[in-house]
Amino acid sequence: MLSAHGFRISLALGVATLSAVVGLLVGGDLQLTLVLLVGAIAAVLIVAIGGDPAPAPRDDAAAADRDPAFAEVIEAIAEPVLVTAATRVIAANAAARALLGEHILGEDVRLAIRHPAAAERLLDPGEDHSAPIHLVGLGTREQRWEMRVRTLETGERVVHLVDRTGSYTADRMRVDFVANASHELRTPLASLLGYVETLADGAGEEPEIRARFLKIMHDEARRMDRLISDLISLSRIEAEKYRAPAESVQLADLIGQVCVELSGSPRAADLVTEIEAVPPVRGDRTQLSQLLHNLIGNAMKYGRAGTPVTVSLRSEGDTMVRFAVADQGEGIPAEHIPRLTERFYRVDSGRSRSLGGTGLGLAIVKHVVERHRGRFDIASTVGVGTTVSVRLPIEPSVIKS
Image (cartoon, rainbow, N blue to C red):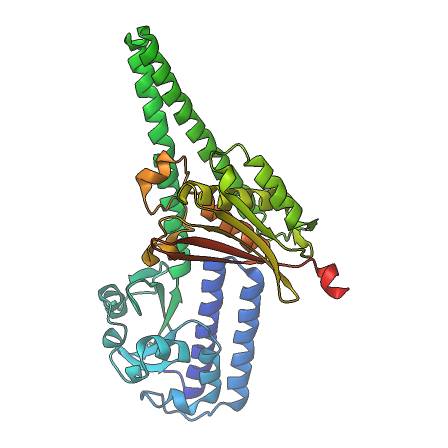
């Protein structure tokens, strides 16, 4: 059996090396792995220099508390780490105590973690398991954790928990996005195929029926074109989100240009502009134009006919410019507002499709605002209307001058 001194060295090296290996396997970050390995060596040196050569092995829950070097090693790890002996928790870092509770020291690890899959793995006396297990609902119902277990030479086991909620959510969003995009594309395509087959079966011999069917087919084809264009735009914006735009843009001029481009709309007469002289912003003119088209277009679609659609622009403080688009439509119930920027989310799917919406407009707006390091806000009252506000930073050279 190892001495207490040897145990400290083995445990310190084991915990820190496990953290480093997990970081490399999961994140692929070689630099981080090297930092963690250097930390492991430093921890061993600390223990070796300041260690107590007393021969008595540690077999009580307070042993870890008496070893500052050991405590420093596991406390330095950001993820929850527990050390168990004979299924009893003998040490836990702050992250583990925050997740599972301060009471876990000295407790049976099966009661501490309270998860069937974890209990099964922790009771297995076999060799180390190279593959992690995934725990759903540990902490909160939405959280997803990855658990790895390593057995030390002394028989103690190191339990390392890594929060995978973010990557799980991202994966689920990707799957949902592909499923929704496929559905949105399949719907107009199925309609087109149906009308083509009907015309081929002889329905096209009647001029009125043929003209009506051709108009519907044209509308469905345009809908597919808009959807594909929005998907491409969203993909491009996401690809550029870490590259800040560098163009100086006069928003007053851009708003005027967009209003001219929308002058052919049936509701063009309802457009009201309240434009103040403001400094230029640093931006991508094409993306900001698309943002304005989406916001003003939505207000014209969903606002009540004959009521104003107001586009305003003004300075806000010394560093920001605010523009807003307000309609006097039916408004949006509060429970829907947090989800409006999700891809393909619609408050009223049938109405949105009938008005030509793709379900991507506000998702594009959100990503454009994020790329421009701005802020985005939606305020709505049912029966009164909706106001969408965007705040963008002023051109840095103007602020300096």
